[in-house]
Image (cartoon, rainbow, N blue to C red):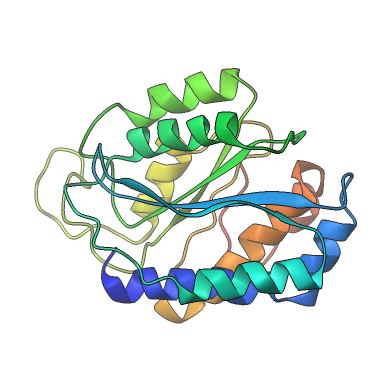
Length: 218
């Protein structure tokens, strides 16, 4: 993602954690709290934890988390798009967490296909076998620069192709889903909806799947 998109993503997550509906969903969960860690990623060796594991249980802790996130300046993350490596590092973070959660959910946001490191589908299957769920937030309103069109004929890809790639190669596990960002102005809405689905859990996915403008649940 470019700097503008990384700021949109940061601000979208910060705004979402201030939403009363998000806080209500957290408090209605089985543990009445969640734990969150935030990591930026790019190439194989480019993973940077920008907010350590944080417990969110009420409006005060959610707002404090949002404030900390909003103060972060997105870093310069280059050297390719290593989705599989990012998934492996995210899985390691569960082992470093001081919290013992009943569900382990990884969200992968990106605007291109994997072009470095291990294949996402292989990593995905390994992590799903360990009981994790991987969801996707693909940025589909812009052109992808590498490896999008099968056969490499250079045609301009359709917006749904990256969402389909995430659905096929990235997401997996119980109730996994893809939540594409189809328009730049939809960043905040897509992030909010994705968080609601993740916090409420897979048992609510059937009720959510008929929403307008979304992508089918896996």
